[in-house]
Length: 446
Ligand code: HEC
Image (cartoon, rainbow, N blue to C red; front, side, top):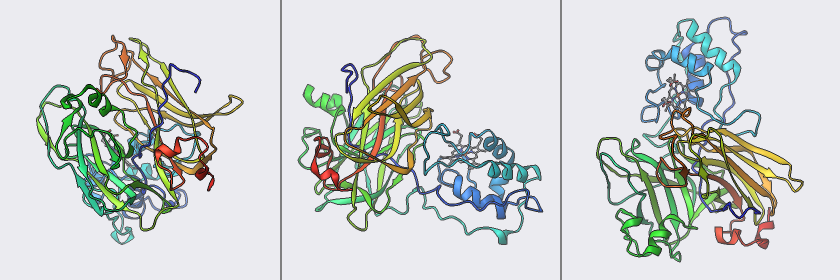
C-alpha cells in the first residue's frame, strides 16, 4: 500500500449475486448433424431456459418474456441479431481473462443454431419435444425466500431533483445468529432505484445509533456533524448490493453470510427521479443455510475516492491497491462506477511486480454485474490486489452528462465512484474486523 494519495478501503460487503442460472451443460445438437431445421420446442426453448429466462420471463427485468412460442417467435429476427452481435445475453467481461461460472455467453454453435432457426421461419416443431417449463417464482430469481424484510415506511420519491442517499433501519429481532445462503433485493420502484446496499449492523456497532429506526432519513437529517459524516462510511458487513442489471447471489452449501443475533438491516437507497413521483417499498429476501457453513463470505472493496477526472479526457486511469491481511479464497467481483465508467480491471501484483489479470470488464452503467470465478482462487496473506478503473469524460461518451467539468467522487450519478467490490470466503470465526488483523491464526484452516 505504497501510494498514500490512494486511499484503500477494504470493507466487508456481500456482493450481490448471480448465479444459479447458467451452469447447466448444453444439449444443443450441431446444426450439421441435424437433418431438419432447429425447432422452437426441441432446440430453442431449452437454450432460452438456461440463458435468457432469468431476465426474459414474466416479471423479469427484460421488457419481453421468452417462455412460450408465440411471445418468442415475434422477436425471432431480433434474437438472431442480438445473439450474433453478442449484445445478448449481456456480459461484459473480456474473453480470455478468467473463467466465470455465471457467464451466460452462447457458444458459436448455439448462435448458429438460433440463426438457422430464424432463417427457416422460426418453426414451432412438436410441443412433445419441449422440456418441462422452468419454474420461476413471481418476481424472485432465488427460490422462494424464507424471510422477506421490507422497509417499514415507504419512501416518498419526488418527481424531480436530486435525492441524497436515503437510509432505513430495520431490526431483524433474530435471537440467534443466522447464516444466509441466498439473498435478493427487489426494488419497489425499479425505475427509481439507482442502487441499494443492505448492511448488517450488529448490536454492538455504534454506526447510526442516533438515527431513527423504521423510518426513512438522510444524513442531512441527523443532528451532529459526526453522525452526518458517519452515515457514509461504515465498517459494517454488507449483506447485498443491488444495482441496475445485477442479479442475486447464492453461495455454495459450504459458505454463507452471517447475520449476528440482534442485528439490524440498514437499507441505504440511492433514488433517482424521472418526472413521476412515487412511493418506494424495497425489500430483501433471504434463504438460510441448512447447516453452519465451513466458511464465511465477506465482501471487501478496493476503493479510491481521491481522484479528479479532468474535463474532456477520454481515458482517465484511477487505481487502488490493497494487501490481504490473511489467507482468503477469492470468489467473485463486482465493479461499481457511474456514467463515465469505461473499463474496470482486477489484478494480482506479484512480488516481482508482474501483473496477473483476474478480470477485465468493458463497463456499462446500465449493466452492473457480478463476475463469479468458475474456480475460486486461494490467496495467501500478503497478496497484493489491484483495481484499475478507466473513465471517459469526453463528449464521445454518450452517457456523459457534462464533458466540460472536473469530476470527483460523490453520491450522485453525475459524480463518480471507483469501487471494486470482491467476495472472499474465510474462516467462519472471522468477522471483518478480525480478518483485517494481520496474521490472525484462525486463517490457516483451509
Ligand atoms: C441479465 C438479463 C438478461 C439476459 C440473461 C438476457 N437478456 Fe435480452 N434483454 C435484457 C434486457 C433488460 C433487455 C432490454 C433492452 C435493454 O435494456 O438493453 C433485453 C433485450 C433483448 C432483445 C431486444 C433487442 C435488443 O438487443 O435490445 C433481444 C432480442 C434479447 N434481449 C434477446 C435475448 C436472448 C436471446 C437471450 C438469451 C440467449 C437474452 N436476451 C438474455 C436482459 C437480458
